[in-house]
Structure formats: C-alpha cells, structure tokens
Image 1: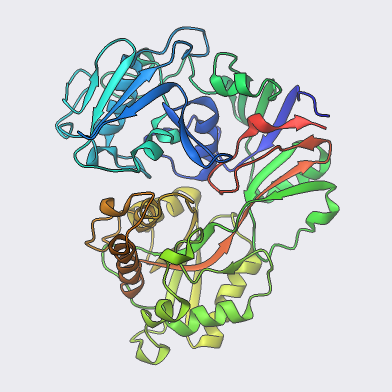
Image 2 (image 1 turned 45 degrees about the horizontal axis):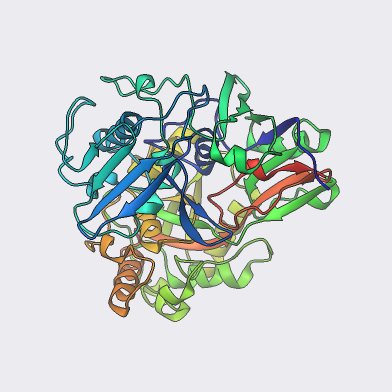
Amino acid sequence: MTTQVENLKVYMPVTATLPDPARIKNTGQWYVLGHISSGLSQFDHIDGKFKSLLADYEIYSSGVHSFTLKQNAKFSDGTLITAQDVVNSIKRLLIKKTSTHFPLWDYIEDCDHLKSLEDECSGLKAVSQKRIDIRLKKEAESFLLQMSSPETGIWFAGDIDSKKLDINPTKYSGPYRVDKITDTGFNLVRNEENPISQAFPSSPKFIQIKTMAADKVMAELERGGIDIAIRSHNPYDSTPLDKLGVDIFRSAPATLLYLHAVGKSSKNLIPREYLQTLWDTNTDKGIVAADNFLPFDPGLALTRTEYLAELPKVSDLKVSKMRVGVPWTYLSKGFYDFLKDAGKKSGITVEIVELTRDEWSSSLEKGDAPQEIDFVLGVYAASERYPAVQLRYITGEVRGPKIDLTQAETPELSPEKKEILRDYQKDLLKNQYAVPLFLSCHQMMYKKNLSVGDQPPADAEVELWRITKR
C-alpha cells in the first residue's frame, strides 16, 4: 500500500538556473526539463514503444509526420496548447542550432534559412490550431525519439522572446511547473493538466530539487536534508553507502566514462596496454570494462580484440605522456589515482588536471581547453535506443569520422547499417577522438519509507512522478 508524498526533496546534478532545452549540458538538466516540459510523443519503457503524449500522430510515406494536439493538451494554467506553441518551440531549436543531442536542423526540410520566429519554412507548418505537419529531408525512424526528448518539450509561444529567443516561462507543459527558483534549487508543483500527472494521481504534490556541491550530498542524505540523491556511481569513493540507512535503485551499467580528444586534431597517445591494465587491475565492483561504445547492444559493438587492435602499442608511441582534464568534484580522488597508477604500470605518464565546471563543459563540448591538455574525461549516459545518436553525441564538436550516421538511425538495423556503426567506432578509436574506459550506473539513493516505482532502467531517465510513500 502506497500513498502520495506531500513534499519530496531531491538532489540531482544541476545548478539553480532554468536549463535551456536548446543546450542541455548534463543529465541533471535533462531530468529537470523532463519534469517541467512534455513533448508531442513519449517512449513507454514498460511496453517498449513510442506513444502519443500531447498529440496523436500519423507518419506518411512522403516523409511527413502529422501531429494533432489532443483536446486536453493544456499548459499548467489551464490554457490550451496550440499549434503555434509547438511551431515556435521547434523553430527556436532550428534557429539556434545548439542542441547537444538531436540536430533537428539536419532533419526538417527547407528550414535552414530561418533567422527569426516570424520566418516561415515549408518543413514546419501549423496547418490548423491543433495540427502541425513536419516534413523531413529524408526518412529517419529516429524522429519520434527526437519528439520525445526534453529538448523538444513544448513551451508557450508568448514566453519565447521573438528576437533574443530566450524562454521566460509563465506556464509549463510538463507534469510539474516551476513555482520558484532560489539560490538552492527549484520548487516544483504538480501540473494537474498534464496527462502524465493524470496517469499518476499519487505523484508527489511538491518537489524540491536541491543544488549543492557533489561532495556534500551524502552528508545531506544522512542528516535528512534530502529524501533522494540521484547521481552516477562514483568509482573508488570510500563513502559507505550501506550505513546511510537508504535503499538504492541502480540503473543498467550505461554511464560511459571515456577520454574525449581536445582540439580539432587527434592525439594518438593512448596505448592498448593502458586500457588492458585499467580493466585487469580494477577492483571497484560498481564499474565494468567499457570495451565497446554501445552497452545496450553488444551485437553492434566491436569485440575486445577488435577494439584494442585500433589502438597503438606503447612501443609505437612517440610521446609517453598525456594530460587529462577532469571535472571539478564529480569523481573521487581515488579514481584519479587509479588512472595514474595504471599509466605507470603500462609504461606511460598520466597527468590529471582539475577543471572547473565551466572549463570542463567547454572542453568536452567544444574542445576549448583552458590550458594544454590532451583529453578531457567525459561522462555520458548512454541511450538504449538509437546507437547512432549516442555515437554522434560522444563525438561532439571534435572533428570526427566522415561517416553519415543518419542512415543507421533505424530500429531495425540491416547488416549494412551495422557495418556503418562498426566503422564509425573503429575510426573514433583509431584517431582517438573518443576512447571508452568504463561503464558505470546511475544510483537513486532514497529513504526507506519511499517507493521509487517502476523506474526506467536507462541512465538518461528519471521519473519522479513514480515516487510514492510506502
């Protein structure tokens, strides 16, 4: 027997600033946006398929996706969501071209010229107050995934500045609305108009998303300042979780810890012996060897032998030292020491350079290193659906393989499409644009009087509307 939680206090890795759906930088921002905005469609992890959410849809052989808003599709203040709200929300992404996961501008036809919300394009049309037609440049079965992402959540057209394109929300389309933003986080209130809230009538009435330094989280959980802490497993962290008096939900091992090349040219500094030493000497049971880029479907990945064969031997290196930029307090000193010790054992010097949050994000996204580093330690919650999307995100803005991944963005992959994915991974490794080290999981540590419900197993999803009181 479970009952509704009145006020749920949650930590997740996010700052006390409303995230921009056009530039999601981490999973914390993904989680927040997923709770305050909803898309036209959704992925149901229980049934394992896409379903309508705010709109019903039809997909035509001509490449048109036609969405018809449901009669009860409303914002948090009770006003109806209109086709213009949808068009402006999507058009903003097409103009800014800064989305970190789905480059919509590469998919929707005749919208490359857009400069303002007043500009029109044939690929994105409000046919009526309720219907929106989106015409794609070419077939892309991953498009529903894009329409189900927090990046494409719907915002009130009147809340989007027509010139600066800033969003200053007064109403929300998600299962929660923002009541207040303070120095310490977000206060969310249930949006009774949202179909998710209606499907989960016992979801928490209020959610406080609290921000704090990562190294303060466990102490706050122990003293009762938060009910739930959501974070990736921190390898070689000495905090005894079993003594905190909490239950733990662990996702599938899908958070990829990887080395991402900094700059536009690759640096061939990582020998195969280093990876082998890391995997052979690891004693942390919360991480497993990332001998592939695609944890959810090993059938699309390289074998360990193929993987290592793309890396040079230590005897072939011209330089036996690499400098790795690491994220502020996100990972433990024990893990960094482990990375350095594995270097010594394999015949190279690994120097760790601590970066601030902004320096780390910029290095990972754009290759703009604040100082001379060769790689930045990346953290990415892998997707269980379209592997091509994951590989493109990992590549980032660093010059990557000249291989068109859009042709491999389909639920059913032919042998030819699988080979595209394999070739892309080989090129990433050979040029050391990205080199995976370990797979970890995210953890939801929660008080024993709570039930987290049937949470999605994938890392990039947390659904707090499933939380109830035991």
